[in-house]
Length: 304
Image (cartoon, rainbow, N blue to C red; front, side, top):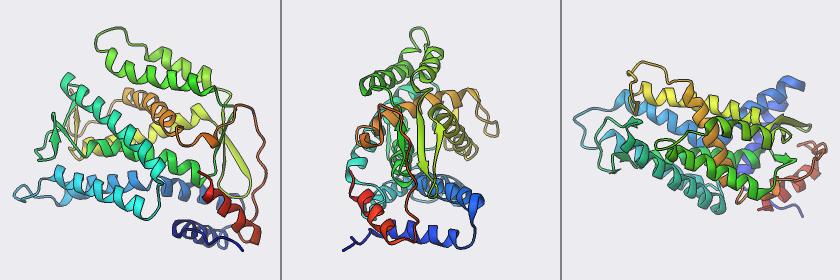
């Protein structure tokens, strides 16, 4: 007997069926790609909406400060992600680790004057509003969810210990470059050397597609850069030397490109089954309308 799928899996299935019955072929697959990307980035999208919404409606004379409202929203969203099984508890623990490392970097960068948070708030630690850690968590959430939603495989993937050293070097450099030589150019080169051969295999439909991993990291960094502009345009944070209506420097996209590798390496602590040391050639997936597709999806759901 086929196992009943979780509510979120049934929702994804219903969305896919809706699109496939109305749009066939390449255009339908492309639409599914963007819909799945948006679904994977749910936490981040909700947070961006919250940044814009609170900026538009918040009043200075309200008892609750805007930053505190954002913190409460972020905590509530994270609880909802777990309650509705949009994230697993294993993923949440790893996302929490990235949350903590991101907050630690925020505390350091604020002290160094790299950026600032101009508004007051109660839930603030060392000049850093506590909602900021959830912005890093939303990126970890996206990576964990996109791997599951697209049934991603990464192949050929470098040795795990090498990627952990690479991620640690990136993280340390975010601190060390304030006191010694900045090695980010070497880290950019290392990302290409290590991952140039790595393909991200994924399914937007039945056919396996692939993208070079460094290209995917660059595209994700561009999207985060857009989100950064939302943050500064709403006055939520301001970079040193930047006016309220000035675009964020493209150099920040390079910083996020590197930080995304840290986030990905962190998520691989619980997503190792998606990694393959050798090149692979994935097969076609069963049609979502076929009975065996439910068995296939059930197996994916049960996989850790």
